[in-house]
Image: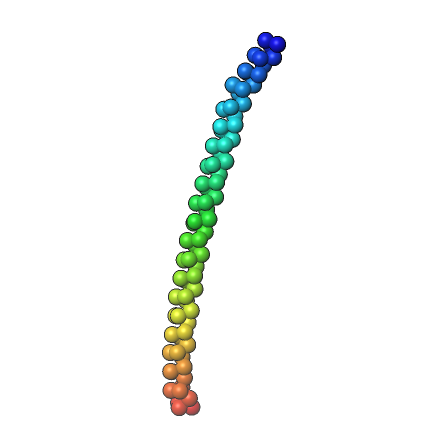
Length: 76
């Protein structure tokens, strides 16, 4: 019975730190995932802003071409 108690004590001594390490890694992994999601959200916001800017630029260029187009028709 004494050997069994000693074996349980040894198992507990090694099991508790291992569980703590695994739990800590899980917390770190969760924090890393949260940071990645936050960074991806920021990237998507920047992509959207870029899309809006490019769309506005293309609209202005199209207006410019349309304004210049009648001038070109008269030169024929």
